Image (cartoon, rainbow, N blue to C red):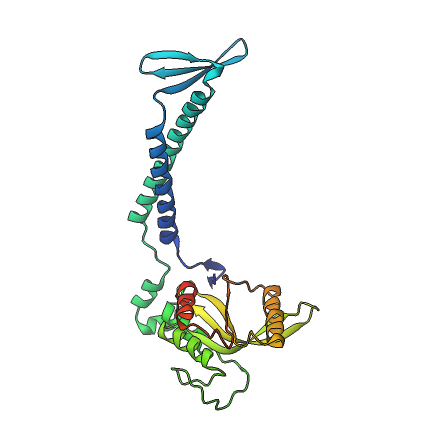
Length: 276
């Protein structure tokens, strides 16, 4: 995740509330499970004492105590598990209450609202701790770069850009429909698998998740039923991995063959999962 910096400070995008809610959901699942286990547990509690260096187990039900012999191993284990589950339940409920209170009282503020609340003339004099999402996206999108030369291919995206295939139109138009900033054929330096030298690769799409400010490379391999093309695709994927790009982390890959064309719904699902 990209960090914003100001005079030696760093500040990550705030995801505390979403993480807290995810943890609450997990805790509640365990709480429900433990409560069901306790409802099915045998009556009473287990008490252990030592006599003549021997551990003796007793079962306590109300005011009545009874010793449990070695033949009661199953009952001993069930009562021990009951005690453990009860202690665990108490602690998980404590965690749940603490996170509930956090969600009620915590108001995320990374400085954007304060920055935008100041007049434009004031903002011109300020180095903000965190640039607002829209401004950050504009700066990212408008970065000047030299891509591969491309003429009039006759294949235009919704944004009026020429691309090299109908499948790239699908990807570009899905990204545009979701307001995902992207750079077409942005150059990346990748490490060759066979040697230590770097190779310039013009990735199909370099995309920005504005919410997390994380960049993703999206490569589409369009002729995977061609043996030579498929071999080159494998080499390219290995170069990405050798350079720190991993599928589902910061790399998105789509493929197609002549008989299995690119599915636009799959493209939409991938974009929503990783880029929105």
